[in-house]
Amino acid sequence: MLYHRYVNEFDFRWNTRKLNDGDRTKLAVQGGARQAAPVSHDHAMNQLFYGDNLNVLRPSPKDNWPGIKDESVDLIYLDPPFNSKRGYNLLFKTPKGHESEAQIEAFEDSWHWGQQAEREFDELLHQKQTDVAELMRALRRFLGENDVMAYLTMMALRLIELHRVLKPAGTLYLHCDPTASHYLKMVLDALFDHDNFLNEIIWKRTTTKNDYKEGAINWPRVHDVILTYCKDTTLAREAKIFHQPFEAYDEEYTEGFYRFTDAHGRKYGSFDLTAPGHGMRGHPQYEFMGVTRYWRFSKAKMEELQKQGRILQEKAGSVPRYKRYLDEMPGVAIGDVWSDIRPVQGLGGEYLGYPTQKPLALLERIIQASSNEGDIVLDPFCGCGTAVHASQKLKRTWLGIDITCLAIALIEGRLKKAFKTSCAFEVHGLPKDVDSAKDLAKRNKYQFQWWAVSLVEAQPFQGKKKGADTGIDGLKFFQDIDQKEARKIIVSVKGGENLKADDVRSLMAVREREGADLGLLISLAEPTKGMIADAASAGFYESPNGKKYPRLQLLTIEGLLTKTQRAEHPDYEPDLNFKRPQSEPTSKQDGLKI
Image (cartoon, rainbow, N blue to C red):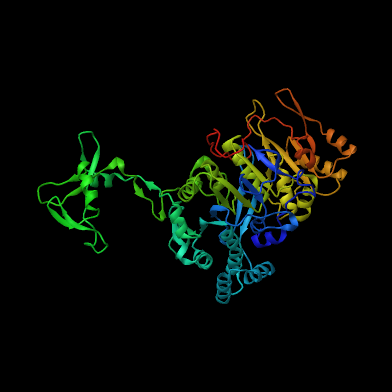
């Protein structure tokens, strides 16, 4: 779905009823288990938001939402869609013996100029950042009303809000590709001031492809761009937030520069002590060990090094050199070209199937370098949650925002499996009662279906945004005892105010047609006695474990939310439906509610 069209269809809603402050609760997740928790506005708690990030960032008195506070976030990483004009399918795990049918189009990475873009452009012209407004006017005159301009308009509004919530010494990393990075840099220069530009990081994300065989006339495209800005470089420098990462020296370097070994087996090298530029940079000139030069250090420092045995002189009159041990050196400082982090698709167990997923190592490098433990990290396009995962692992507090229920469900499952019960967080924007579920069903039926399917930990079924209705909204697989092949469950979701008797009969027919062992009907409305009798007539699935499970199960949204109902089936292999992320240490982590 087009992002700007998505925004037009969906507004972030606080989803709280008109209760008094003492009664108002929000949905919280601890180790994946939903529970009631107090509303938290001070970012002291990890928080996950379902909704348009523009609406989540901004305050909304109408919805009783304070927004994200000014200058409250230490580090922002955003990996927005790139305007690549491609559709991205989201692949789920399909057990052996079943067709790979459970895939849906997670999003279409494309923009078009239209009413929504025109409205957002008009808003840009009337906000306080006049430099951004002037730039966008100029870009529109140059580019016209086209896809790129629609993309830049969407991004500019959100970057203004991100700049607002970033702390004065905070850092922003914007991950993009070369198709739009040059335009985005202009927007960021206007917003942050070009003096606060830090780096254009080049990440080699893939190996060279043989595109020339298909007639390509361009060099193979193998890198992404990560634009890095500080809100105020002076304050950031004073705060000493940046922590330089290093990589190990290669063998050729150590053999060439650390060729000597002392009596204790420590490798060392001999290095120049004279100052570069022959004193032009203000280095001192004096005589030391019979030699007059411009030196890198003061005379007092040189004399101290001499006492420590760190000065080498081959013979009287030769220029002294510095004795430096290899084991004292941190390695080679990593620069702004990163070719040592592999794409996630080649990392086996880490890849969850999300189309634009980034490797955990990439986010760990960014977060470790530009924040400290306890800092607040925000990802406004969090997708499958790699930045959230890395922040949790590195003991940062995190805020994640995504516009699809599907992404939120994936992140909840990812955190549950990676951190077990050591990760606590609040989820905002998803329904927590029947009234808010009805509201979501009215606003966006596909998001409602995806959310409802996630309540039984099933996969959303493909083709829900186009084509004929197959009667299937979700699929779930289970492994029974002593059986080699996985069994299948089909899920149907009904978001209307009333159920029809035919809804149950239709699901019975679809289950038989698809050869599924079980069928789940999830509804907002309560089933009638007649429907319950019809479902019971479908009989039971008999498991080798000696238990019987109703072949047709009627579940309500209220029952699933209150935990009075659940999908009943054997579950001898719980990871059949979603790829399992790597497990992280489950010991207590500071600052988290366990």
